[in-house]
Length: 478
Image 1 (cartoon, rainbow, N blue to C red):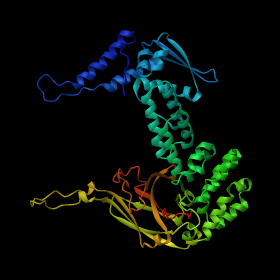
Image 2: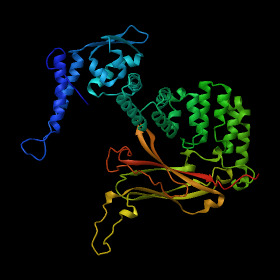
Image 3: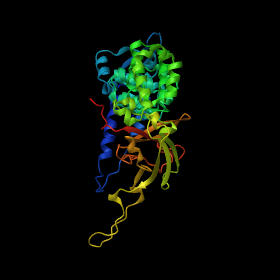
Image 4: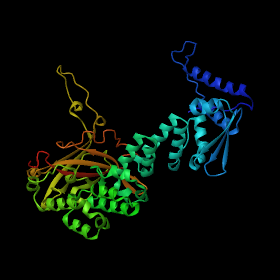
């Protein structure tokens, strides 16, 4: 961050004197005292210089260019008295625009013109305060004028606020697509997948484009109450968006109908406006779902392929597939709990349950860090400290009977955060299919801090999900 200001109203001589002083101060801070001291004393007046530079912009002293910023579609013009040298240091476009003229007119969208003062201030001071509504216009200005540091900074701000649930994820996704910002696009997509229930119930859902919907619907990491909730959200979107029939039918075929119980499927066929309009396009999927629920999974697999995504549950929050777990003061000591899930999504397994035992340890020590009291020579070795450990979560079945039904289990742990009264998913940890724990679980969490991003009112909000997966070794006969 750099601020320079004026000493007295003057010409280029005073301006260059200020810039020279910046270099002298920077070099003085690096030199050691010539009197023989082993270490030098840092003299840092950078904050004062930055304040003066801000004052230079505000008062227009020694300015040699004028920027007239006009909001598109209006007669509103904002005038900025600036300095060719400082603008050109940040932006090659400004350097070219101002190379042979001292006054330029810049046409900007209304939202961009409204924040142009913040944009120019950043060029002088290297800092600004961003509000959510200003993120896109500031990022657009930084992109247009090639100010890469500001472009990265605003993009980081947007990603950070997405993680906390504050950002308009749908609008930012579409903006990221339009600018080719792949990192921001992926961040928006991940947030939407993990918080689809919250987004589908908000005004943002109506702004989802067909392209974004096509990105979301195939994902297995969508967090929802159940598949029926996704169907209703899609039906509401279809009613508002009125897309072409091909788009609507492709979207309806992304629903995993075998994950919906038969009684609810009957209701959908009888009452759904979307199915009344596009029913023939998904008739084969509905028949497949009914067949799946009518037979045991092992018998069904003798005739049909069960390895497609239609038979893989998403991250469902319904009690049949997991349970919430709130751990108060999680840094204190070990905890345990248990819960039950349905053996499989088939109607044949709807009455069968698997019991799961869960152990949480805030300071588990890997074998390499566990206490060792003496080495081979008998010399005592220092004990590992509790803070050397890391959080650990172990999920084990009370019995192994589930495998007999032709399924194995994938586990997912969601970590919630509270934003504007809503509990949103901030982190998700998946277990390897053959493992009892997630190796990276809360690897970077500081549970000792009361304001940790992983905690809500000093509590760890988890949701444990178990997804039955049919063994991939089962194949349909040729």
